[in-house]
Length: 287
Ligand code: GUN
Image 1 (tube, helix red, strand yellow):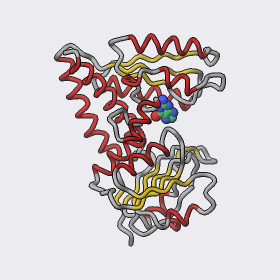
Image 2: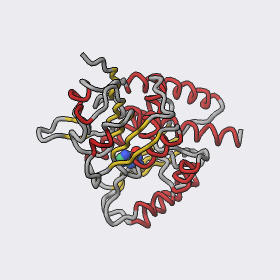
Image 3: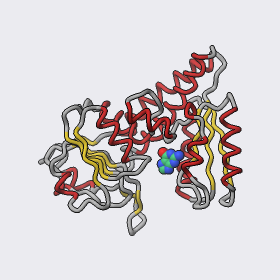
């Protein structure tokens, strides 16, 4: 029988969030409330749920948050004007524009309008460039959350072979950079990769961030591999599933993250951490 360790993202999140609460309380004592401004454009139901959870998590951990729910026909100019206001607002330490944005809005322009020092998503080119070059900056929440999970389970990365499946700006690309920075030999696979299993069978760490059920199963793994599932999908019957076939993966892997309860809670946790750190930085600069 294979002995797999299920990585508990809820437990790791709980510990990190307790720390957020106590650091937020320390800021309250000097009259600072860490503030996150969230903007949602349009009425995509999944985005509405994500955004609600982000706002709720702020309330629960001593951060102030505001939510702008803008109609789907909001113009790019209107959205940019709102971001400029938030950039100037000293009560706001983090700005998050939920993606995806409606087609008529250029998401690059919107992200570049956010002041890099308030870009708690880590999506601005200044923060992406910082990550690429090893400079300090905000790291994107989901891949950074994956790194914290590996750290919490004392999983060493240096010298390991890692495969990242998916090449999105939100997860795949920054995940690749973080693993590379930590000393892994990283292969990036994606929808055009002819034979995914050739790569995953050789990997010590596999991170799957594709947005499709059952992209990876146990037969595609090396025994004892560490499998991180970033997916959050609904299958044909409307049931929540990740990107990996969890049961067969657990027969082969050394570690695996479940969905739900694996990476998911870490994304919001790292958003809280980034917003808190932004507030701490401003407070240290202007005590
Ligand atoms: N859409 C999916 N994930 C994210 C995220 O982490 N941040 C933002 N802003 N939008 C998203």
